[in-house]
Image 1 (cartoon, rainbow, N blue to C red):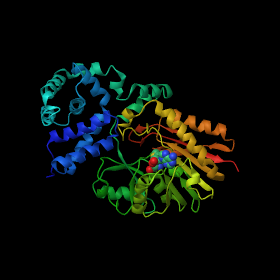
Image 2: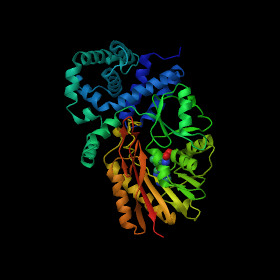
Image 3: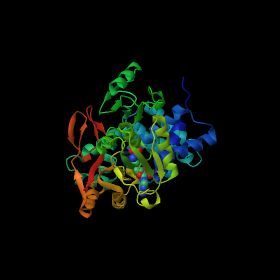
Image 4: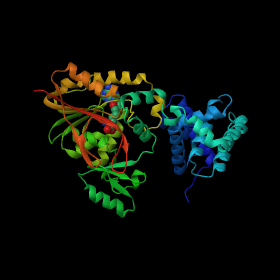
Length: 442
Ligand SMILES: C[S@@+](CC[C@H](N)C(=O)[O-])C[C@H]1O[C@@H](n2cnc3c(N)ncnc32)[C@H](O)[C@@H]1O
């Protein structure tokens, strides 16, 4: 039997992470801090409980718009942040409960009683949660009249998508609110895709193919329990992200720059596909460690360099590159199902700020590309301001840049590639990405 902390402790930790998120902290950082402080106070949290805390916090982040609207209807005045966060986590667990509702309520109330700053409001929490259970249908219907609660995204985000993607904005938001699948990339240097599917099946792990090298697992699992993980037979990477390396099309012997490389998902894919001479660049030493770990596990080699892509004079050796991948820093609005906190942390003004930084990176790296060379501009964003707008601006100011036609197999069809919208159907299963390939006129 796996060891587990009491549910009340798990709820309290998930709530601490949600309170931190609401104060502007990224959820992974908030979760690490909550779990570390719990360990310091009451001993190490069992692995199963760490996973449960993470799942609960993710669920609450994914439903934050709805649960905050419910809370506003249930509370006469807003409670202090620690109690508000406990209420949010409890309500998010009660919307589609995976265990008895009474247990969720009792344990959330026990979590409130256990801390001096929430204990005085434990009775109030109990009353609001029980009222939610009594009036659930009416409260949910009333809350969902507000788009923020209906779609669990900030109003500005919904507005941008609605105006830029009038036919697809609902699909994008639906996918963003669904639990993310675990997608693998088979290292074809070590193993065939069908062969690996066979090994998964032998191990009793249900999976299906969704791309050239992409396999989706029916249920996520710990990576080190995957067949061949330690030997570098597979990596974890979304099927949409797996399009980057083949679209850049680097060949054996070419000099390649991966300009925004950490944690190295696309670096390692490029090297699995070709024996190229690759430089992996990212902003600082701490960002480079995961690139090195991934290279080592997969048995691949690259020059790994700390530097700012906007300042090549600090790290470039002066020899032109044949191919450059710019997987630019962006809002990450295409991968929100994997990072449910992003939507609550971003501001509308981030689009313009990032768009300017993306243009700066492109302009700084273009001179490093040799004549006839190709640069792939990529983001994991669905906002036009970071995608088509950046590429159009760049082409308008660089007469030696030509945009190439791009196509790839996505799901069961070959299709043109530019803005890839997030999709979660049996045949197409990927996050949202943007790709544009630019060739330098000789
Ligand atoms: C979308 S992530 C890259 C993901 C990576 N290509 C992969 O597939 O694993 C963007 C990366 O750009 C890096 N970055 C941001 N600004 C940068 C700059 N000025 N120069 C170089 N890298 C930068 C960030 O540290 C981050 O690791």
